[in-house]
Image 1 (cartoon, rainbow, N blue to C red):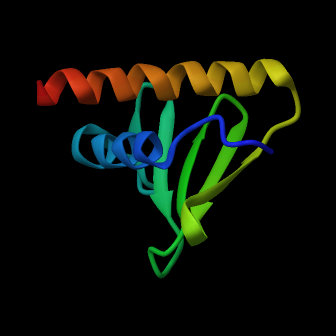
Image 2 (spheres, one colour; image 1 turned 180 degrees about the vertical axis):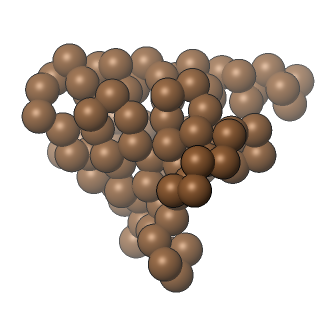
Length: 90
């Protein structure tokens, strides 16, 4: 899979959700995206719209989904949160 999302975007979105999301017990939830880590906090996860993104080693990521429409909706939400984060820092 070619990198459609830069690592800066992923990390910005993850951090924004951690700071502003609602605690669910499984992670933090913001705008339909759940952000959490594995037990050692080495791998980050973003989950929503039927998609799970795993981000970790060497700033690489993998998306798990069944339908292209799920991926498209997930990426829209990621971009929405990223834009919110950027506006907040402006």
